[in-house]
Length: 352
Ligand SMILES: *Cc1c(COP(=O)(O)O)cnc(C)c1O
Image (cartoon, rainbow, N blue to C red; front, side, top):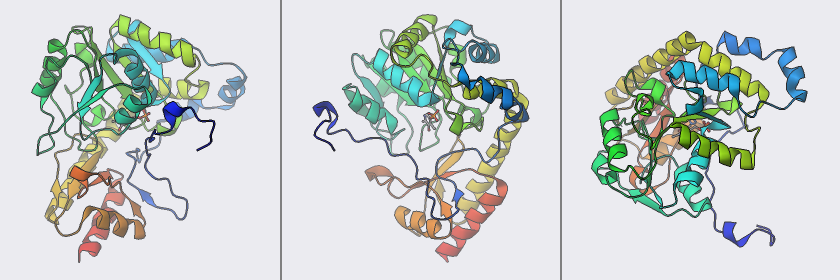
């Protein structure tokens, strides 16, 4: 730390992304990326002309992308905010809507705690039940903003739209942020987007990083009442009006249009998830019921850190969180069938 750093940030402990090691090539099952490439439509819009156009700024109104998303989700253009990864939309939402503090589960996406610290927002951590499910009643009449990852990370457990609706209905004076990064793996009817017309305080955040195979493009979005979206725009235009670059904007709009391809790749991942869950259970693992593109699992035959290190030595990366309630677990991204077969074989060898 330099002596120049503002005292406000001296104690900040930043988010720790999943490792991206370069010492050898790994089967990467640690950051929930897609094993599938982006669609043909995406590949075709990233061409010489698009690169040549990089001399121009990107559209600060993000019209083409907002229109594609609005028509995909059956909302108005004015209900859509686009961001540099959904992390940025979440950051602006924390900034905008957490004046009275923000509540979230004790075990969830690590960025929520970091954003609260960074912005000096009082955070209320609400413990998950013993089985790692969210207790929705704990968020009713809570008198502060709420953020819930749904499906939750790293558990993969889904909360029903009815339960989210009750939370939104009981807190009309505060914004309920639903982070749906993994919703495309959760089946039909799981998303809260259809509720945004009914609840002015509901903001749904999604991303192109997981189901749409564009993690490296950094594009996310939020869908909500027009007034909430205008607030996010005010913050964006006060920080970085060109927050999404031209290539990523074009790639994302093409990805929205290639719905069929992504429905197909997402359903393959769901199939591979079932296959992986069954394989792990056969070896005696306890696997939480996941609706995401990862599973969260533990075994009494080896401790969590041991499994992580053992697999890493065998060229397979998974994610281990060294924190109290979840130390015995590992989060395993669902990849291609071939990679999941290699994972299961490596675990079998380790346990033998
Ligand atoms: C991966 C993830 C995000 C998405 O991050 P991007 O900035 O869109 O890549 C957001 N929330 C959760 C819970 C995630 O796991």
